[in-house]
Image (cartoon, rainbow, N blue to C red; front, side, top):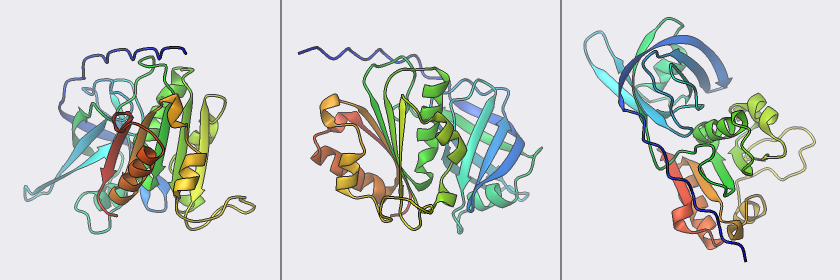
Length: 253
């Protein structure tokens, strides 16, 4: 029996502070979400999976802030977000419908230490499980993995409502290959000729499309609260250690 190589200690965390970002580009990501690219000269290089706070200030001085995952592990000076609209929200409707190139927003970060992945830190495989817009930080990990030509096996199981609701569809298709297995589950409608049944992710489907517990993968799960709690419970039922399961969730069931 061979011993598992020890994980390498993580480097120091980037300094957290407030930054001013200038919008470079906005473009439609899904019917309810936009991708936002910002120039942030003071932003340090952040690990894949990190998040930040966006703060908006109204003309009367009223402020509102919300947390969003950084959509890729970008070099210093640039931030990409993918924001899904919460119709009754205070921040996301403005970001989705009103933000324009040249606008400035306040950003606080980079934040997060538990839910991040860095190339070269471990030889153990990585399993990513995403529900809806929860794929954003997991895409960042997959993109960082590909950019580094890292040979650690990656697998992404992504549950989305329809093909139109898949975030980073072209980028994920391009990343899929020998070191990134991509598994899609559609809950409402699938592409023509799709062989798998349409419907919510099941425990059996999770077991069949994720790295086995015996291989001791690092597992990252992100999505709505209900999705994350259900998947994390199933993973432990399948033999994954709780310490190996990293979770991040957003509001709603």
